[in-house]
Figure 1 (cartoon, helix red, strand yellow):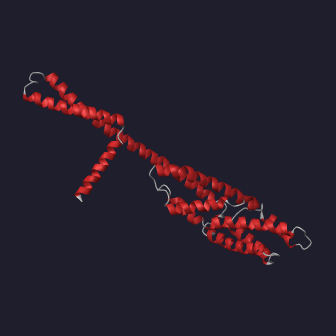
Figure 2 (cartoon, one colour):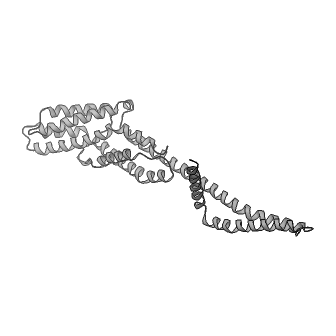
Figure 3 (tube, helix red, strand yellow):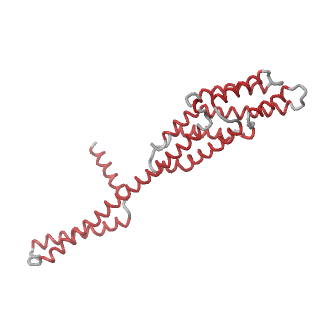
Length: 281
């Protein structure tokens, strides 16, 4: 046990010495041996009476000897104090940047959630995912299942109860979220890790990247501008006289798939925000 502790301390001291600037190490390499030599010379001179009746020379030699020890000691201590201060400053800057990025992500993430639905939006998004899967299944059938119309209306009602805007706002939100994540992953992560602050466990970081990759894969152009546009295309689909059934069905299907991918991301948003909150602590 003592041998292990001794080896550990030697390793710490060696690492501490390697971190000392090279110029200061050279000052120590030169000054300390000279200081030892001056001390030996002073003691030897005392024993042989060299300094008798030479008060000024005695003070001069003793001061020079102290200087040879004091200067490298002071330089080494000050260099490490300055290094610790610089590290503390780096950590403070990294923490402040991380907190600002976390606040920006949180504000944007919940921007499209109604103020009275912050405690229920996850469940609402999960319900939208379920409805969306049923809608995709109904639209995939030939001809589309009659239930598709009721599912479209249910999707609209459930969405507007919890969220604001429509397809145009969703597309804008997706773009903004990806930009914020890109900053978080590309700038904040290296900054936080470089400062020795906490980032994310590898499995959680991988999960976050996968979720944002899925968000980036959404075809935002497939999202209808608003729900009125959805209804207009749906009327074309249900009209027997229309010759544009196939085109209308494909548009509704593409919108439903994009909408489902958005809802899936939002359903996991609370978990994502908990992970984001851990960064920089």
